Picture 1 (cartoon, rainbow over the protein chains, first blue to last red):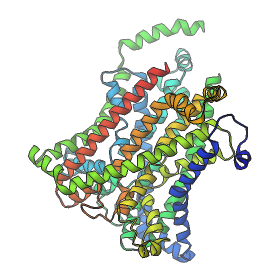
Picture 2 (cartoon, rainbow over the protein chains, first blue to last red):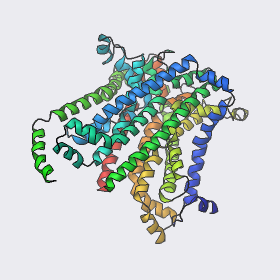
Picture 3 (cartoon, each protein chain N blue to C red):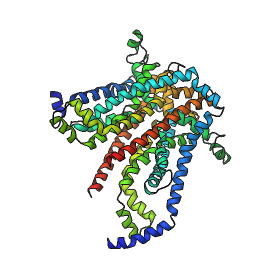
Picture 4 (tube, rainbow over the protein chains, first blue to last red):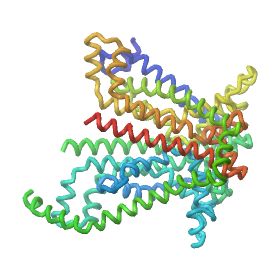
Length: 284
Length: 284
């Protein structure tokens, strides 16, 4: 009881605090925290120059450029089209709307390996979309463009699902006032709506980027995995593991983990901003 | 106010007369969703049935496919209940009590979402692999964790860790504490309060979290791929089985197994939509 009194800020009549918190912390530590720290400790078996050689070899650097470049581009495309989809779902009524609303979450529900082979079949040179694109001279499957398509697919729901609730809660008075004062629809969107949804939009963008950077299953089938051209960083880790180069795999993994933690930190800050903005508006 | 009220009706009727912008935006959004989501989804089922229904059912009924299905069910059957118990315990502690480090704990729970699935597999190899921390001890005692079923279960638990908790925490925070406090003051025991007061309030949230957790558990590819060792009929889950068939150029069989997972995804989306609908209805 003394320990729970130490961390509790306020006494509560409700029971079960020690048990619930203790169990949660134990489970979190055993399953997540201890295994993750093992990764960082493993890199200490390398000297600094060895670590640097591992994480800065040309093939690995090429994979960072592809992984983070394609993830950034995919997240940008999702930011634009995600906002469009959220807007259409909130503001307009059309037949089959509920089905479309539900299908937006398909990339969350569909296993990544299934998404990977399906996208490859569709975008291969003899595929439904690959054939017409190939006729135009655009090769998608087995090129960096294929990586981009897969990352757009898996990142699609994030922006929609973060922007949608903000649009639903948005007061229309401001927008209507802008219209009545003579603003065009584009002006009203840029000056009134966009600033309101911006925190949510940035959160969705960062979530989509973080997910894309670590993505493996949906990418490897369509990427072609050509070293220096279409090889993503998670695949580099797997290749090193298969060659029993555990230290090398861990070094690259630590680079990715550091990037993920920075992104997680940003997402938390952005979500805090969204909530505060939301609360302010509700108060007004 | 009066000017706005005077101007608005005419504007709205004028815009309703020719709603070109809504029509164009809706068409664009639907075309984007159709190309990106529906075409690949349809491709899964078309490719699966390419060699006919008889071939399809043979591919699914094959012994290796069956053992893959059984392993997938086993991994989800262990991971989902454990993460459910954790999610409820963590949400109880976080939502019903004020304690130091709460914000940090919430961030740590989200951690597995920001870690690449490949790294989620890697961390268990670093702990339990032959070169890992416990590797020698485990091999001395003839216990296999990685490249065996326990590793697959662990990796699945890691990637699905936050699902239930992150649904329940905001929901239980929004519910407040008054009802539970009243129950306890009136003499209810801890478990009674939980079963009779808390659980009925959050049952849709629990179901929602469990469904998403289960979809991810059954579909996980990257993390499981790293720790599985890919032993046919022994350590292959259904997504891994799909990959093996695909890499053997047995496309029809690969898509037949993939169609089971795609079907699971569709069922997940339907249940999710129903749960959301019910929840909104009850709140009203």
